Length: 314
Length: 248
Image 1 (cartoon, each protein chain N blue to C red):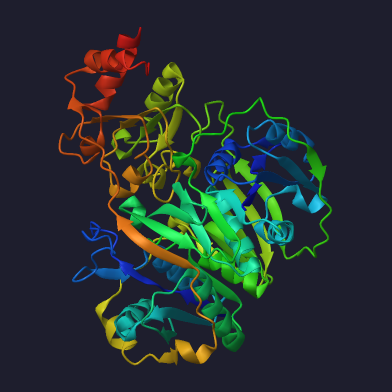
Image 2: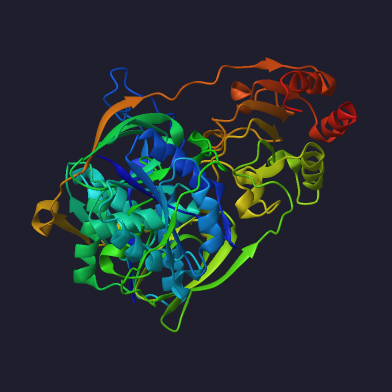
């Protein structure tokens, strides 16, 4: 009998789509119930969004002023309390879930399965190791709660709209630490589609050459309605901010269309895009490893090719 | 203030990982081993804090078989004052590693624990957070900038939404991200100096930790390969191909 608690990720009063992806993974366990837990200072709008996700049994809310920001040290003791009676606790494998879930697991005294790609059975999962260069099958001990993070690129977002799960307030009386304080969140404030959920992504790499030159990538992405990503080399060189990094240590994404522009294709970058539907590579070096995984490759100068692409699009 | 640094040895990041044909593991025989790159960054940060006068002693910690000594010597050559080697021939999962660190913390009473945000072999990204939970102390993961003053750490974290700044009391656990610093190169005289630095050896069994590993890895597989696609001759052909697939 499985009963799964999914930890909702949200920001600014909006539910992150990573939550619906974690619900997809929960559905694959074929559990008796899937409850979504929303920890917030004001959980109502997020809870209402979560209640619409297909397959959700109940949405549980914990409203506390201390939950205004996602501090793992503050949230984990509450989740560990709420986890009683559940066979599984799932969180998305985003920086939010990666920070939080191990803290919950340790409080429960259990191991964690990171980056679940597939569910083979209620306690058997597949996950990547060595930057995705090997896939392991792991079995968790059925005598303990399974704490797992869900590799969002491996799971579609569970459909939303038809569900109408009841929302219940949960009273949790856990001592919360005051040793960790939120100071601020500096966001890019981009109007472009979200990198992790966009159906099209255009990424630039070292070949773009400078922060100023990156405008050509932004402009082209805007023309086709794509999110913008970057290789580690481009972020390290200061061409664009850290939240745009795609790869092993950045974001792992699975858009329908991924266009790599001026990216050579280090293994660590390829790890982040393996699940993309169609990969396009544009690079002046015909020997670049990116062409090994590209569905369509075009060798040439990106500063000449991109304007031509724009012209061809009309 | 003492700083404890997690210093794991892993398969070098440049090695192309091969899965054994029988699915029993990955090929590690004769493969180059190196410090986990994130742990090198953690050590570098600890050394810089010592150079600024914030820390007085930097201790690198490794958990592994007898031959881990050579790896710990690299940490000492980089500049750590001493090393602790917890000796075990068994693979150690993150929860067990966190329990080992907790035992060492009880003895050493560090003001800060620094480690990589993840090791590039199991890519688990768990040990630091688990340690912070067991120790009941603050954690700051994905650190891109660390400032220590007045008994507090101000850490800029590289999160999905951008850069988050948090402030924690000390002691705390900080796990570091790629852009925190660039680790220094080891110089020959430092390798000589490292030979005389102490390495404490502790048998894993003597720590009294229940090593009940709850996760069993039953099979290793190579990832599905993406088949190589086609090369197009120009922008017009590319646009036509993408339009035909309904992608543009």
